[in-house]
Amino acid sequence: MFGQRIEATYTNRPNSMGQRAGSALSRRLLLLIAAAVGVFLYWANSSEIEEYTRSDGRVIPSSKVQIVQSLEGGIVQSIDVSEGDMVQQDDVLMQIDDTRFSSEMGELKQRHSALTAERFRLVAESNMADDLAFPEDLVSTNPRATRAEQELFFTRKQQLARELDVLNDRLSQRQSELAELEAQQSKRNKMVEPLREEVELATNMTRSGVFPKIELLRLNSQLAALEGDLAIGEATKVRLRSAITQARSEIEVARSGYLLTARQRMAQLQLELAVVEETLRAASDRVARTMIRAPLRGTVNALSINTPGAVVAPGQPLAEIVPADDGLIIEAYLRPTDVAFVKPMAEVSIKITAYDYLIYGSLTGRVARIGADTITADDGAEFFKVVVETDQSYLGSANDPLPISPGMVAKVDILTGRRTVMDYLLKPIRRAQYEAMRER
Image (cartoon, rainbow, N blue to C red; front, top):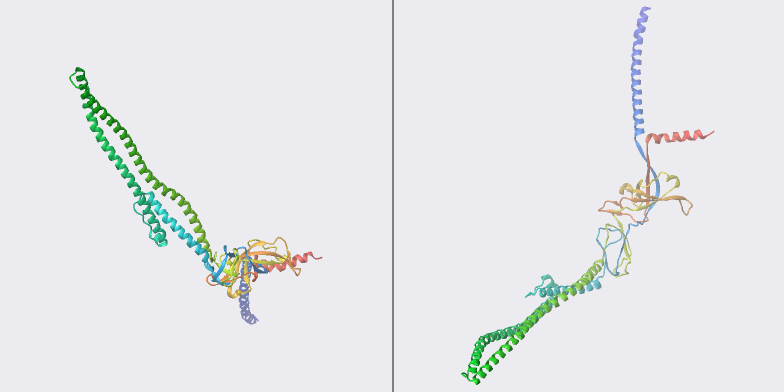
């Protein structure tokens, strides 16, 4: 019996060891499952899933679409772009015939250069310059005007010189006459005093009977004549001095008149130049506007003129350009049940159905406006209108953009919130629990 117990003990030992090994494996498996569940619960509570409200929409014309017009109108000479072309700012879209405007501007340029040449002449005359020189570019622009002004400069210069020569000769003559007269007067003054003394002495001698009376009369006659010549000479000196002053004044008047004419004309010329320059700027702008240019970088959405030779009315729209650097406007239509969590400035993903988004990608944007009330469609369906602005107006790259035109259909996904995976998983349970508690 003791032997049987020993045998039984040895017989049961392997089974006990197997049980212990199985128990350890089970514990490890349970720990692994618990760890996995814990990791899952942590991930489910920390990881978020984005929630989107989806709707259909379409591209609508934006107020930012640039309408290109011609201010003056005219005849279309050439069209340099086509619809759908990508253009840079200031690229030429089309050209209006500028013959009339160029002719007007050419006439104004000639008028301006002629006035400029005249101004150079007047400046030289105002400075009493001896010569007149023009800039080379002015001579090449209007050689006829510069030549005419140079001839007029020398003509007026010679005329002034001749007039001054006559006046200077007259002044010199009067000065010579005055100098000669002053010499004569000096000589007479030297003669008159001795003659007076001689007359006085002869008078005394005549009273004494020593000197003949007839000789005294002759001496008095000589003294009277000499004093008369002195008086006439002094009067003549006054007249000559007055003539000299007048001659000098006439010389100054001639010079002043020459300068005054130049300066008065200069003042008038400045006004004329200002008017011509302003008119020339306007004419230059008109010529420049015959080159119809893109006001900004963008895509040519539409051309209202397609054939050269067409007549364009002033202010007529010629082209529409969708800005490349601005966003598009997407009009989306949301059901009333989907609009509750849509907020202004919410992030939006837009897929243009004309382009495969798996190949060309999608646009991003934000909600700009949400309609205040529902709109009823023709089929009776009600919806809210939501306006979305995109971050760019094209798909693809900036160097090779895919244009997007008004009217294209879009799929719009509006981000309405984020929730954890656990919230998403528990949502059906919570809904069922809520509905079950409301039942009788």
